[in-house]
Image (tube, rainbow, N blue to C red; front, side):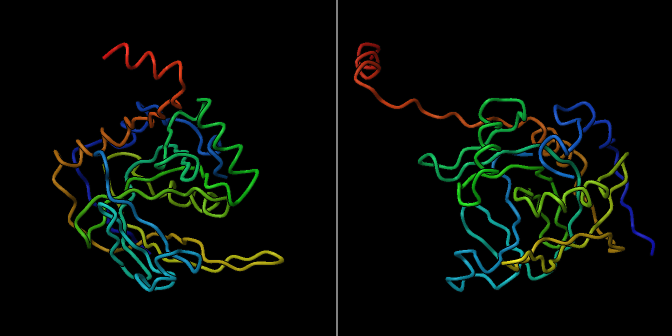
Length: 231
């Protein structure tokens, strides 16, 4: 089956190669603009599914903490990827790190591998353009089972300036004790209108230059005294 390509005046392969994320995704567990919307598959363990705010095994896009369902399948255009480690439990707010060699990234990897309930995850995060919603979004493949899917997305990334669509849906995964849904990806022949080149360029450059979270130091008597002295 042929796949439709949209060619723009940006060499995405060169952009990825020149970034800090020019290495094998195996190094982060896989065999834009600031605050981009993020895309996620919502399964039976999701609070939003349990609360009836989104359907079971549907994809949802979250913008400013508001999640909208996009249905059980989504046409997405994969553009670039980066490494990401995320901790949603240890601090007042979730913290993210992108340098896979940093102490914080390695610590999150260690805790994620040690316990599935740690609130930690790591893996590739992709930049998509969603033609149906006419917006960019990120999607992180941060669990063990989703990291196994990530190379299929990477295979569809542009190697030059030609973008192509893919279909995102889900499939059943299982082990001896559990069954759960994971993302499934494949090429699509869906035609689409790419975003303006200048907007695309700006989002891509921002996506490849992420900022690590800054974790406030715990307040102690000594440093509280220093803070007061500095005022």
